[in-house]
Image (cartoon, rainbow, N blue to C red; front, side, top):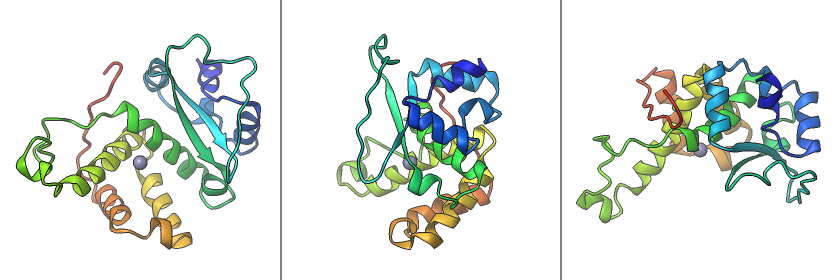
Length: 188
Ligand SMILES: [Zn+2]
């Protein structure tokens, strides 16, 4: 399983970068069921070289899959000494969580078919909840504190990008230890 978890990483430069930073997925300390869940979801991870990059896949590890989700990270944001190792892992698990932890349609705070929803008033709140649920996957994997401290660092380093109320609300929600909202795909 260790080796196959590293097979989530697509592209030799992404692999080399993660290895250099001691961030290969096999070293994240995830329980086996999370490793299996991520693989079952056909999620793969690769690196975006800013401002843009092309990725040639030879051999193509996605060839046998009908579809796949690619989590792309930018070494200038995730790495570059800005974030700790746990904070880097937490950011990647947040992105993975966007797919694995689907918003709960029955959630009372998120009345997706309500008149307010159609009026567009709930849209901002809904977007926030999507971020919270992605955070909750990282928290479920044991990286909640790392998400909060990572976001706190990013908003100080890049206030233009991360200085908004939504980031503030994510930090507060995690720091306040609010209950996890989990609706996980692929097993319990
Ligand atoms: Zn997100």
